[in-house]
Image 1 (cartoon, one colour):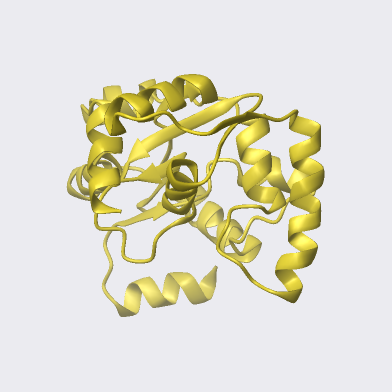
Image 2 (cartoon, one colour; image 1 turned 60 degrees about the horizontal axis):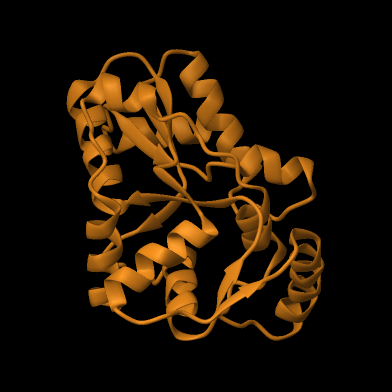
Length: 212
């Protein structure tokens, strides 16, 4: 905490907006592999408890054009379009990267006491998600129904293989846990306080597909 606080002072940072995994805490409970450093999360929480102007958002699957590193969500979208569309339990909650960026801009401009906001985005069952994609690309996807338990076992195996030989496909436990156990977040607070209306999902996915 002291090191982070000192670094903010050194850089003369008056306000800070932070993105965290929406389900990081839940992943830890089920033995997942959230990548974020627990020490950094704890330092951030303590700074907020002391009134530091740190604002945290918890996004769902972030999608949109101009992804500099091809995020996990965008890799998943490409796999769904090119290879297979898995239909299983739960669904996907998508936040447009431009809506997330706008929220951060408004938080920085507004200032005020520290705050945390759920920004999962719009939730769709996997079959609904497939329907939207098919309407955008004008062609059927290769849909395969798989029970959640079978996918989770595959994810555990994927973790083992990934340690030996890294690969790009989202066949790891963390990604599959999201896909099979996701609980939609309530984003009403961020939408009300920051005046944000999420853009149409067809715009988000359409722009993402064109960029891919």
